Amino acid sequence: MGQIEQGLERALRTRPIPSSTEARLRFLLTTHQGSTRKVATVLGVSQRTVQRWVTKRSRARRPPGPLQVRAIEEAVLARWQPRVRARRRAQAEAEGFVFHTRARFGFAAPAGSSDNPRVRWITQVLPGEVARELFAARDAGAGEQQQMVILARALGHAYFREWGRRAHGLHVAFSDVEFVDFSIG
Image 1 (tube, one colour):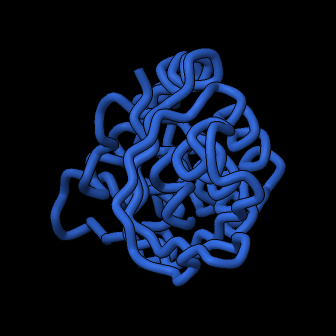
Image 2 (cartoon, helix red, strand yellow):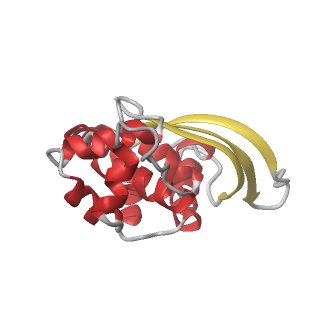
Image 3 (cartoon, helix red, strand yellow):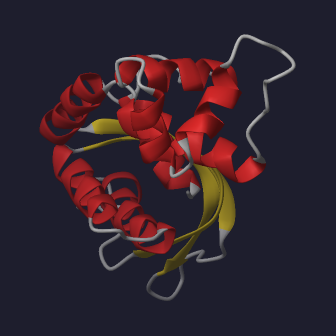
């Protein structure tokens, strides 16, 4: 998961996911009505393995391995606050969002301009059309590079060309992303 994907996920949540593996397992058990069989099916392990992970007896307890910890985290992320996520996504697509980044920006511009790439902190309000395009690309399985192209085009229009009022013909190159965050509502 790239930085843009992580930033979108953070923006869609109002509360952080449980931090410990034990708390994540408790959440999965709660969402599946306490059924270790259903949790085991979701995680791709045996029911007995899940029972060993959640048992109260310390001698019988076995911690999940690194691959299982990752599977638990992904399962929790997929099920965490589904209605809140849907509502915040619809809000971003309708009203837009604020995009915060620190990245290297370069330009392809007419002669006489400074097109040397440099690192910039940028905070810019972007319209709902950009949010729709970004979410559609993410849903279609677009990679980090394709999402960066969408954001570079939007930043070029909104920030560098001031919504078409200046710097006509300026093409923005967006690379070396250090930080990405989104604010919705």
